[in-house]
Length: 85
Image (cartoon, rainbow, N blue to C red; front, side, top):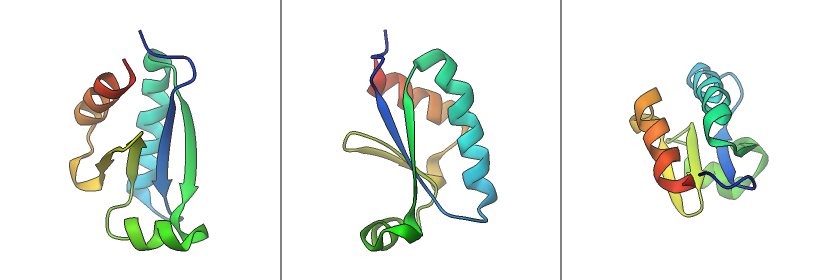
């Protein structure tokens, strides 16, 4: 069972179609896994911009990350299942 207070960090940027798609997937999966999404635009934080510029979008739970090259509905659900339960 997922923890009610689980937080999923979502690193994104403006005008990013893939980011919008992944956000929709997260919102769908939120119904089953009960987590909060903290969305952060990498252009508002220089450290985030430096770390994630080529990887956007990125989903992070704790120290674990899933970046754009690996994100699909199946991999995102598996990632949430492994790290939220």
